[in-house]
Image (tube, rainbow, N blue to C red; front, side, top):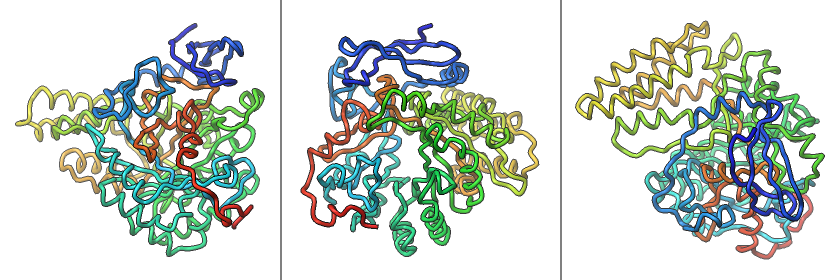
Length: 496
């Protein structure tokens, strides 16, 4: 049964092709036919019921008012940067600071030694990219992540983070392998003091077999704990490789909740050389992952506790109605990611879903937003006060002792516009999420046009994440355009 029509890619030649999203055997597949290489059918989502539930949260945005690359529809997605076809603003911007690295992993193609050249924008080029993001309308990009390569290879990283803070980014993240951070606690402190909000630490498992760098990771966590630098663990999940440890990764995060803010699982995307067998045998979809999480946490974190990113749209509507100012809108495609929260208590993990009826919560938020629009600005406070009464029906009884804290957070944030309670909530709860980035085998142009994670480039473009990493506009094209010759230290085989 055909569910929808979209565009995909030929995995052989990368050609943009008409594609059907179909349901078959309670799974969702993407089917397309290349004139040269024939028909391809690949797994899109492994659970049709979960696909349908997430579909109910669809929320299409209106895009950016000042896109930097206007093209005609038939050029999509080969003409990326963001354009008039794009339906979402930037929630998180990525900037590759360098392709140099202090590791020499055999499988990695995104480093200077593998590429044969250095990509490293100047400080002024980075500042220009940051300013472009903050000039985005109707809302400036609120968050930036510095990536690579390995960002800590740059001597001016602290100054770059300070500049991002100065320009108004509320969330400043850095993706790192942790090697330098494990060796130098003072360096971790310097990054935090400069304005680093969150360290995204590559963390593929809790054993030597799945994570050969586990001892380095533990040292990074120790150093970050000393200076209260928040961490999100980022495991790449591969079927048959480390998918049996997703529950243990969550347990590990909970044991270090004083500094680990969450786990952001990333099911593998086949962006390098991959055979058809690799894709079939190693593919993990979002339903696969959430099912394993439920199984490996003994049913504590259930699959139906996860919600897609657009579930947050009612909150944006409420704040926008109350303040009268445009708000960031979470119009990511509903099948790009999923998340939930759990409190860490003496009795173990307590999912937020056991403290409130999440569906009822969003229903009440929607009613409050509609009331604010209809009753006008004179009754804002009264409308919110009345609306909060509706939360009584969504708050559940919980033995965790955290229900009162959750109620306080709602009251402080929604009525008093005091967001300190939100910060306290975040430091006492564990985020458990996943984003499944696409590759040529499951590429859906509709998802690209709703992407909220964008790469900034030195020539002033913003490129959707999956286009930049695995679509028609590869990161190598950007890197080569601004390539510099390698020097001797970059030619070293391994500089650990």
